[in-house]
Length: 408
Image 1 (cartoon, rainbow, N blue to C red):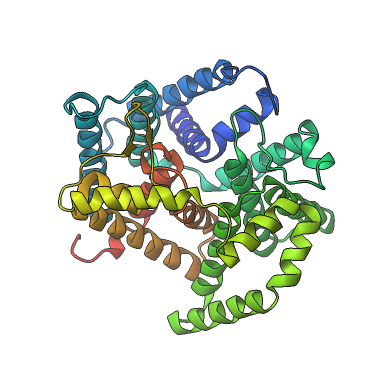
Image 2 (image 1 turned 60 degrees about the vertical axis):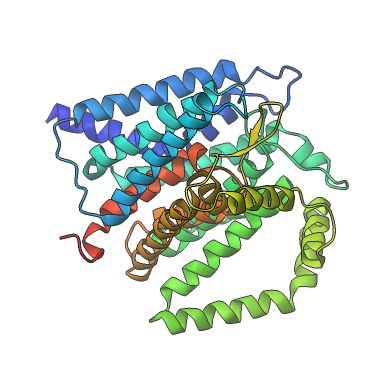
């Protein structure tokens, strides 16, 4: 019995850390700004070591449990990861046209963060307590946004200039904006799904307001897109059928289009930089560094369309950059086969999320997070650095393993 409780505790803790642990630890222990570039390592390295130790402990405790691979998307996900590791290894050690620098952190992400999380989630799936995870994740978001608001004075004082706000030295504007997005739909979930006393409801509404403020003050466009995608997907999934969901989504899109000017002006009252950047995006003006990366990725794919050529975009200085789109990253790393695999993985994940939300599962909040992660991965980030995305994909593929035809 004691071992069982320990298993539940560690499995749930590991799951929580994969979602919100890094953000929570860096917010609590790191300053909002610093003159020392490497100051974050004093906190992040011990945290990563602790998180890895917990995942390894979970794997060890559940090592004898028979893993359930009766899910085609899960098998494809594992094959994709193995193929990607082979590609990264080849690019690092076998090719001679590029010499990639500083790959130790890359391998830490691949094995110490993502692969360890994948295996531990597969092994501990049935021991994860989503009730506890929900409350811990939500409270963590509240702590992060509250501490950041009062520790980073620029978020309050610099309201009349073009300032993009990092949360702290280890949490950039995109990450901070994504936390605001998570706080928004998690607050809505808490209000709609649970019966609360009036005082508690007021508290949740205040968290919702803080989340909106944090999202806008981050000054990043990607998280706003992610929030719209999550909301649209939520409304779409709650329809009685697919056509009803499409109709609701179209009406919502039309309302936003008709009211775009007053909405942008209201945003500008809180964060001038987000209004400027969104208007530039709508009009098609302003610099777009992502387009340059997309063009570079497409060039690599056109030259090597079948099996790919490199896991990232390289330059002659030994540096590498991801394409800010995991489909493009898949195409340049593994060619058309890798692109098809990734498209199938994401499509299967969205099917799982749709079913979870449509059926009003008591824990469909976890599907909302996955939708946000997928949306974010299409405009920023790299698959081999996204622990949360891998964990949530594994969790959903195991949860809905009986829904995939052909695997009994």
